[in-house]
Amino acid sequence: MEKQFLLILAFIFLIGLNPASPNETIKSLSTTNAFQKNKSVSRFISQKNFDRMIMSQLQNVRDYKSINVQLSSNIENEKKDTKLTLALSRNTVTPAEEIFTYAVPQYMGYFAQQNIQPKLLYTNGSTAAIQALTSGSADIAYASSLNIAAAIDKGVPIIAFAGLTVRWPYSIAVPKDSNITSIYDLKNKRIGVVSFASASYHDLRATLNHANISESDVTIVPVGAGARAAAALYNRDIDALDSYSDSFNAIQQNGLKLTFLERPQSLEKLFSVTMVTRKDVLQDKPDLLIGFVRAAYKGIIFTKLYPKLALEMGLEAFPQLKNSKPQKTTNKKILNGDGNMSFKHENEAKKSIENILQTMQIALGDSIPKDQNDPTQWGAWLNLPQERWQAVADFAYQAGLTHKKLKVGDLWDPRLMDKIYDYNAETIMRD
Image (cartoon, rainbow, N blue to C red):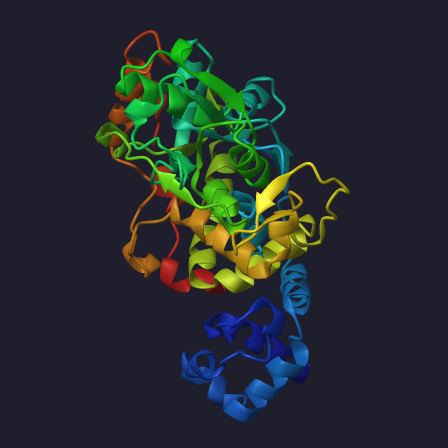
């Protein structure tokens, strides 16, 4: 009994640990901070025994998970978990939102605390994610703010209710040796987008509109993201690419050097992926929405503080990120880092833990305040002010995505945000 009690103590005060790499999680643990954070530990166990116990019990993240599950199972919850489906605006697993708003909350027990059992639904872009929402296949969707505006303009009964990104991640890039130097040079060019259902397509339309270039004056080509898009650029199937930040990171990891075109200043107030739901769900199931978002936000904070441990959880939940087998094909020519041409497969970059970690952190960067490392200072950082929502509404209208000028209240209902943020970031690891 005493041993079990000490094990529980070890788990609770593991919050101060900071693993140096996913492959050496335990070897590099520094337990001194965790031990010293609470003087009550010293009444039961010495620093030496505390270190020894953690080293012997927590051999890897799966052991950590099993302890977490074991502790959770000892605390019976009278409420039955409520199932919830989340629609993502992509059709493949990526080291992004599905790690810090799904895998981490799942492993840390944040969803269990809210009595929620979420599952993921992958779709082909923001428009498709919204369609899944309106068809009843999903309860929440992650979709671009512009796509949300376009759908609402058409009378679709949805509403954004919680933020997910604070920046606009889309931009246009060209190969380093391209003679395209600004968005005004895009006329008569072939421009790649993720898909016609993706926010990258709407971003391109808005950019062309700013440059007074008609959509009929360019050729728009859906090329996907990551290595597929890199192949299209290298093979000169396209002259430029409109995509999102972590996709560009994957492209550059494949050795293709890019030049990013200067964005219109009007984009600076924009933001992209946002949590959206049907109006009837917001009205009838507010507690379900509050619980999910609260757990997701905790996952974001955890990932910022402990990115390598969060990545381990992500790889455990989505082993295909690391172990997916490349197809036997040689039709995708990509550059090596040294500039020499070789054949790479679409999933090859994902084999590198460092590359996956970097991609995850870039995606996370779109969801957190810039240059603020202390989550206790973030405040309600994803409760974006009305002026930013107004910028979305104005931009959507100017880009021709909406037929009328929408009001902020047409797009955004923040009534749940105060309750969502009803947690203490300082003690989040002990939740």
